[in-house]
Length: 322
Image (cartoon, rainbow, N blue to C red; front, side):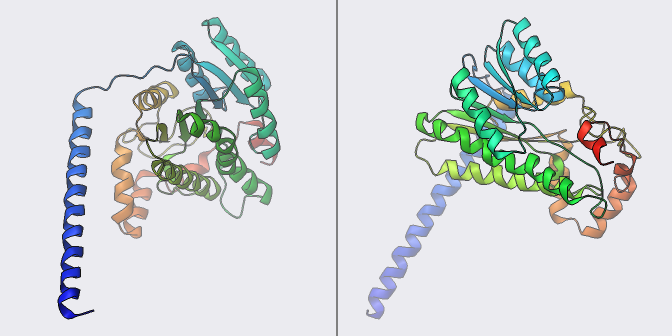
C-alpha cells in the first residue's frame, strides 16, 4: 500500500469516527433532554391489567404491599414465599380486593423447587409477564462469625435465585417480546456497609447480574422487555430489626409503604433504576471518588461502622443459628 493510499484510508477512518461521534453526541443530548423533561412532567403510568405478575417473598413486608398494588391495578398474581400461612394471608387480601392470586410455597434457595414451582404457576395462571424478585435474607454477622451454611444460603437466596427464576420465565418474554423484570437489591449493592459481608457481596452480585441482563436485552432488535433495578436504603420491615445509626434524622429509615410507592412508580413508568431515598444517588457517586479513608470517617460520623451490632434476630432462619 502506498503512502497516498494509507493517508486516504486514515482520512476516511477519521471521518467515519467523527460522524459516529456526532451521532452519539446527538443521541446523548436527546436522552438528557428527555430525562430532564421526565423530571418536570410526570410520566403516564402503563397498564398492568391482565398481566401475570410473580412476586417472591410475598408473605409480608414489601412483597405483600406490592402484591396489593398490582392487584389493585387488575394484574393476576403468583405469590411465592416460604411462610405458607403468611403467604395465604396475602392471597386472601388480594382476593378480598377482587383480585386473582395463585399462592404457592417455594424455597428459592433450591433450584429444583424453583423449576417445579414455575411449572405449577404456568399451569395454573399462564406465562409470567412481570417478574418481581423480592425475596432476600440477612444474618448480619461479620465474616468470621458466619457459618459456611449461612454464607452459602445468603448467595442462594439473594443472588443465585435470580438466575434460576429469570431463566424460567425469560424465554417466553423473549418469544413474545413483552415483559418486565424487577430486581430488589439494596443500596449496599452499590456501596458496602460494615458488618454483613455476605449480604453486601450478594447484593453487589445481583446488581451486576441485573445490569448485565439489561445490556444483553439491548442487543435484541426492537427489544420491549423492561427491567427495573431497585436499591433501597434501610426499610423498616423487621428484616434489620434494631439496626440504627447515630444520627438517624440525617438519613431516616424508609417505611415499607413509601418504599413500595417509589418501586411501583418506577415499574409503571418503566424506569430502569431507582434508589431510595434520593440522597443515595449522591452517596453512590461519592463512593466512587472519595478516598477509602474519607469514607471510613463518614461511616464513623454516622455510626454506620457499628450500626449492625445492634441487630436483633427475629426471623426463623436468623434464630436457628444465632
